[in-house]
Image 1 (spheres, one colour):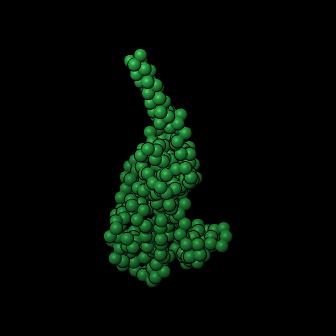
Image 2 (cartoon, helix red, strand yellow):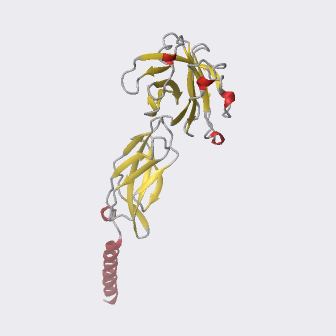
Length: 295
């Protein structure tokens, strides 16, 4: 009887311990219930039109301790965690122009010393479109005072660019007949205050006036399917050359009267550049300043 009594008590003890342990062993359902709520990405934006940094902002979740940000270059591709933070924003730096980036966020909190994550938020993306060059320009109003070296109707200007303008090409001569009028430098007379009354075409002489300025010697190169397609001046930027623009001289083509002389207060000067394999129109006058537009 004693042996049976002991066996009976041992059985009760086993049943009781199993019940007690079961109360503390989390199941998949209790684990999911302990996860924090999901968040939502509200903003994905470039810090500026020329920035390589992307700022991602998401909603705060009261049940979360922190947030993990993930990035991918494909919407349905593999997402890599790039940052865990207790903040609700993060700036992703050094991203490449021309690519599209997708972002997702998981919230998390700690349960028994371990991170418990929510499901992914919905993806939000941004396309890093090509930066347009940031230019500044100064017209040389004294150029007509040098008739021995220039036509009295020539235009001189200094073109400078920000550090984002590495390998910019200023189109200086176009030899293909199809492009000759479309991409040639020009002055649109009286265009500042209305429609142009006349268009005067100009040719570049970028080597003519550079000796008057300590801004270096432009590098004239040819490109295209053959050397006869067009010529350009390569604007190559380095940190040491910031603030040192390139000087250009423009001579009018078949127009030798004072009526064709460029007046920055009334006329619009226009020429073309190639930057990051895109063609841009550059316009300048004193009233509106410089404008750069993708063609």
